[in-house]
Image 1 (tube, one colour):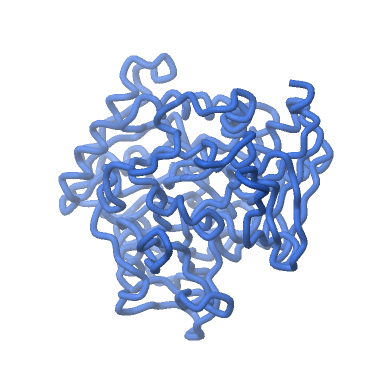
Image 2: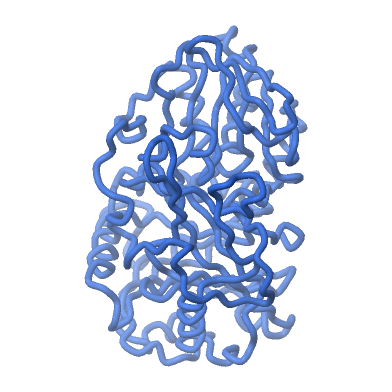
Length: 454
């Protein structure tokens, strides 16, 4: 073990999983850790975790993840992570037009909370109407006609970007080295000696060598490890914001996360910036390209460096998603319906076919030299305080003990069959209309450009 802790470890990607791994390893005596990211700062705009806030919930259809989420929530309440956690609760509902698949998903998720000591009587409250919602959240003045679901007061959201910045600063204090930027921090290929991965080559040509390489590139992982693309589909969702005045922001302070499963969800306004973040629900946007491993969905870029890459409008979202967000505002906070939506973007995540993470060694590699730590599937950020341990355990054991987190050569299921996603996938090339503040078509990063507001 002492020899392993002195070995060189290279983490490629400083997003949710990469930062969590760097923190856990450094806190557990590993002394030779380097982290790469093509972003120029942390939180990296290429990470989906680079955000104002992320939902923290324990409701899963799978009891396995409910247990992990409860462990993570406890960790969010520790002195280190506590300043970045807001336990406001969650309103989770369907509207009368919501699909039956959504109804079934909500019901199954609630069942995993039954009998949990963390959920004593009164923690969950049924919602049968818009009136019920208003009785719980009086700041919501809209009709919310026919809304039904539940209120869970044990949950809320994390101040995502700020939490990542804290981990970054702490890791540097613990001696972790970070190499950032489009040239030296941008890994473009793996380096091998036989079947042993010896590191990566950066866009600049610089070689970063290590005994153990952990690739944590989220939706972008398929560009460095193409053989993983049958297991991970890059998908994107639309995000927009309302810019509220201090008085307007105070009027919504303390509200729970509001999630209407067939429209979208939003959070209380950020106390420092007045930004209220809203997201539209859909099955996901894809960007399928032809690769050596068949058709693969990878995040769309500007195309300047890759002939197969796809342009997407910067600062814009599909009109269909903007319409959903507008309907959500009208149903809940109609007093702000006249405000323009700003700071629009699409955010890329890496979805597996079964929503399980992938934390395993890449097949046909030797000496524990190449691990993948990816497959966020839209529910990884809540695990930020505890996820790094999972990568460390694989490193120390030399294998992944949990079948669900293993590399799956022929994964079961399809990208559009995830039980808690609703609707049909749509490729970005098939979106009929985009709307936003600008018309130019430039590079859309994997995360977004809100770092200055975090």
